[in-house]
Length: 192
Length: 294
Image (cartoon, rainbow over all chains, first blue to last red; front, side):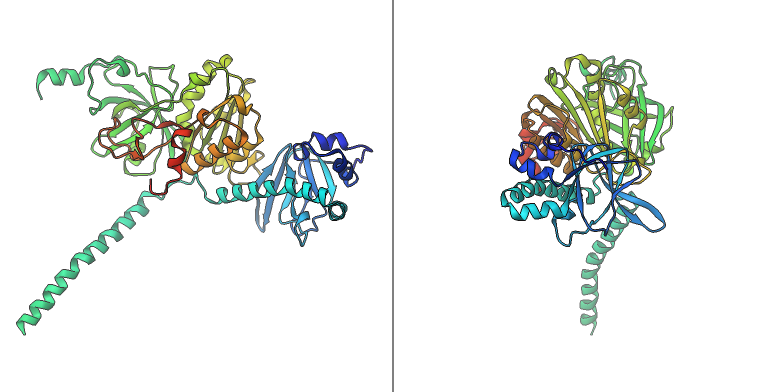
């Protein structure tokens, strides 16, 4: 891990901290480190303590879920200019997915404990960081919902439609049968 | 049938767009030249008029394809508008008529009525960045506009194709996308909704690609085509990014039947999608997207 003395320009250049106040930036620098991950290396694993979050400077990170006996499912990819990891900000501070470097990844990492402590001590910093995180979380929630819709799935096969149509036919026949039954009943009554 | 009418119907149509007299309700026989399977349920057919001649159309327009004895279905034209010698349609087999289309082979005939509807206003984007946003088989109706943009490449700023598919196996025109990506003057970004670790590309909805930008929102025209929900969210993402809603165009399909605004089957609010659409300016129809009953 590389930890240059001054990460301030890297923080300022990243879209996540665009326009950050100089004073707040200096507070952030104290919790930041410059990191690099080779393709295939994990940034964090599901269930682990969420001790860091990452601002991706270069490369792609896959957010994935492992499943026994099958290849892991990638639920999202995070690219340059985006953020990986938000569990550090929500109790119980445990990662909810795996994060794997798809390519060589260069990232700024932030120590969660350090940042949380500073955010508690300085509500302005706390508000600023949350203000930047909340829209990302909202966007990801909305994207996840869209993803769940399976928008590009083929419409239900024609066979299913036919079955439905058959059911509808049966139903309508049933409806037609009802008067017949009433008629029979009436005739029976008349016969009596 | 009287002789003059029969002659008129069977006369070779050199240029259907400018043909002097032609009943839009009468299908013109076309022969299938080639069929290519794109995906397990999607195929592309190349058609030529049986009577010879050419077929002119604008990107975004559609034809009514008639499988004799089965029925008619509206299908967008997906070929190059500059190539009038062949008519290209990409179709997903999802119903009775499209499945019958899928069963046709080279040499078979089908009826074609069209072209119908409005088109992608490619020329209105001259001088702008041009962002194509496609989802699933929605890439097919956009492809003619992409061809036209590439043919006039120097007249645009950045040209970006953002494409979302269900899985890596469902990517339409995969080889063509790879070819486009290889060009130095076209940006192609593909994302899929779900994948395993073998896929090295983006995973996530296509709106994520819009959020990543790469274009000048104040100077951008965007053409969006895909499932209606996807178009709605894509248009909102473009708007959020700063693109003027008057510069976003969407392609809406309803139950097109006659193709020329007579039957009313495809009515969408005050519009007939076959005649006033399928390509609409987003700011003119944004409210209609929000009405559940439509």
